[in-house]
Length: 199
Image 1 (spheres, rainbow, N blue to C red):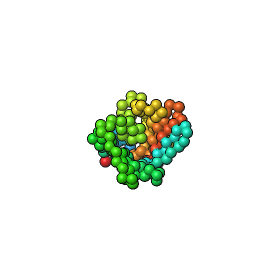
Image 2 (image 1 turned 90 degrees about the horizontal axis):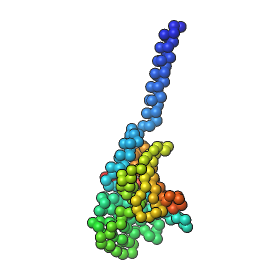
Image 3 (image 1 turned 135 degrees about the vertical axis):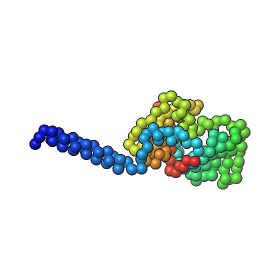
Image 4 (image 1 turned 60 degrees about the vertical axis):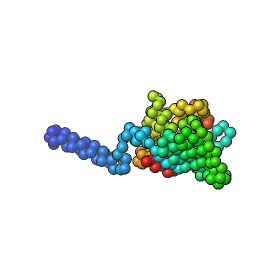
């Protein structure tokens, strides 16, 4: 066989193999046409959302679990309502126009705090994560399995909850979970997003 023909056949086989491998990769990633930076940008551009979360709070003494419904319209209008555990079900924290309303629908109790300024330090809020990420020069992201992991630090006054990681599902482009912990990793909040929708 002529060397030129042999070289041409080898080149053709290589080209077909590369084309097939690229096709196979694209086939396996159906539904995920966004690159990592685009997914991060989508999260950072969320203006309002609703979510039902499972939250686990670990301290050095015990662990508490909650199911919470979050609603974030804007910085001056947002709320969180506890769905579980049963003994505090119906407790709702609502922030609107610089007023914090703490209510319990089951006990018919309402307490209003005027000019309340500290809800912005709510570390478990998705929007607070977004603001921390945007305002921290050391924020970064990386791929881990089928997730984009966004890392940042929070500026709240609680020294035990400084580090934040948000795991974003690459196929749905939605948050999957958030981990918030201290530098020594002993105290932590784990949030699992069961349902989340953006507006």
